[in-house]
Amino acid sequence: MKKRSLIRRLTGDQRGVSAVEFAMLAPVLIAFYMGMTEFCQGFMAQKRMSHVAAMVADLVAQEDTVTPAAVDDIFDIGGLIMRPFPTTTLHQRVSSVTNVGGVPTVDWSRAEGMTARAVGSTMTLPADLVSAGESVVVAEVTYDYDSAADYLMPGLTRFSHTYYLRPRTSDKTACAAC
Image (tube, rainbow, N blue to C red; front, side, top):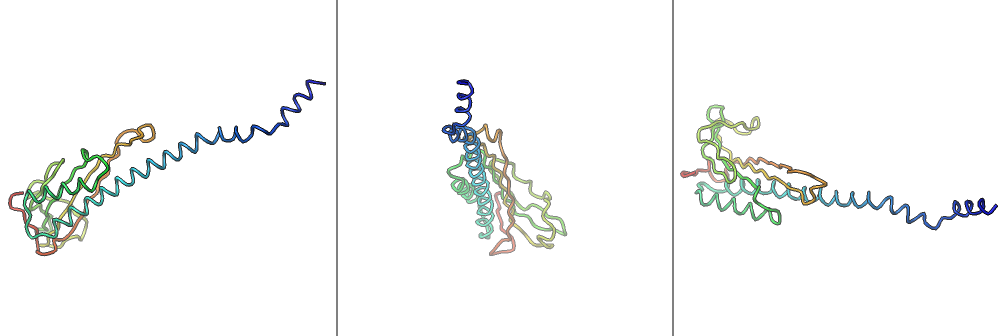
């Protein structure tokens, strides 16, 4: 009889239920929190990289003529925009492209961390972006994001963005030494 009453007492005891439930849910909630934190960091890096592409295109498109030193300074500003993220994997390229007889042709190109486009080479642009004889400034940026929590997001995630802007003060932004 004593055995039966002991079993009845143990099965009817509710004192540790909350602790057991917490022990089961805590790891899931902590992993969810860490995952959301990491997602937000990656999203912030992607948004900053996209802002760099827009800024590079905008600053170049505002000028009639740019110099290689001015473009390099604009690339440096891009590095500042990426803070607090490391800039070692930030790669930037800006080019002026003119539609010559229906063929988008590179007028000049300058890059940091990637190869500049060859002058006179062709480039694929979105349909109906520029008509014959019109020019566009093309800024291309890539960023390799390395998660601080490699166990949640192993390896690198590559973000890239291309931004197109027409020159604002002239028909074409020139860069003689680019």
